[in-house]
Length: 465
Image (cartoon, rainbow, N blue to C red; front, side, top):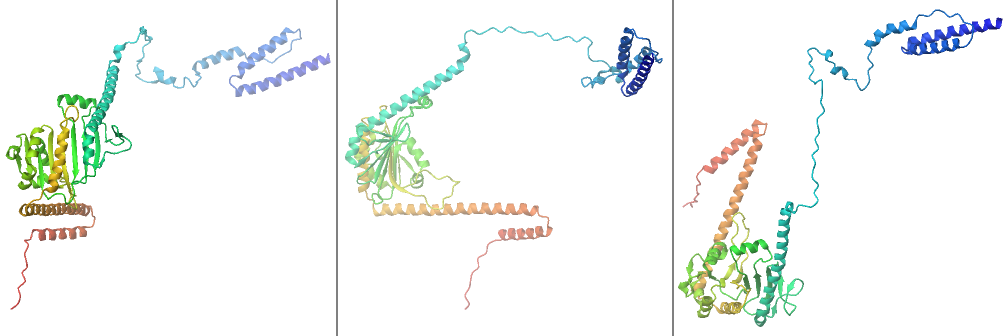
């Protein structure tokens, strides 16, 4: 009996201590009383389930009423999470005069998926632009191959027909090496482009060498070929003969078709300087389609003899121009460029021949013979003393005029440089902060202007008696 009473006493003390500890914990944790309430119910059920002698417990306040009283407080408690941190912005009671703009019933947009037909076969009509471009590229490549082969064939045929004549007049004909169009020999044309071929000949009297340039139509270019149908141009053979220093007297002469003579008279430096007047060809026994530009009438009469006149009359369609000069320096210099020394001049004879549709046939051989005849004629031609002195005076006057023009151009450029320097100095003085420097510069500028406007006086020295 005593053991039972001692056990009950210890049990009551333990319950009292546990209750005191739980009350202290509930004060720190607001939700701990819910846990304590559940724990008390479980303990009570366990105690009454066993047939144990009831134990007196202290009277506790009704827990249910306590929770019923705290329900009113729970209505005002809002637990904030991270997701609804900004929910108060959507509460219409937070703002005065707030009106709901969001419709109460939000309908989901209806998505309509259209049925796209599946393309089983490709539509070739959608690639018409690509087809046109492919056709143009194929046509350009085909024209390039055919035109290149055609030009090479013309150069080869020209060399086959006329190389024996060149071999009879020159020791060395043609070049050897890579990119050379030859017939049955290792020497031939040198290909400068797909439409341009050159050949150098040397080893003949009356000249230092002769350069043949075969300029054909750009048959490898489809665009140029189409333009040639509207405005046809012939194949041309340019002959440039380098004359020796003592092979000819000083004179300038040119004969050619009117359009070429007019263009050369305006563009070439020597023709515009020494041959100011263009005379029609009928005054010299030539066809009316030709014109003559000459510095010396004596040299013109000596060059245009009966044989040359007959050849020019017979092949006037193929002769574009024949230009002989001892002061050849090419086209006129641009006015913007100022040369510090006279241009280099050469003694040359330039001949331009228009070839036939076959690229140089029977008409080329007599014209080449005419060139060789003119070379011998120029070598033997000597002017009279009077004509020679007139030609020398013209050259001396031309040199003096060139010197004056060069001096005037250099003086003009120097004046422009000085003016630019004064302009920069003036801008510098305007940005200067020192007024004393500005005043001294203005005085200096005024003195310079007065000195420039003052009349120039010559001082004469008189000897004393």
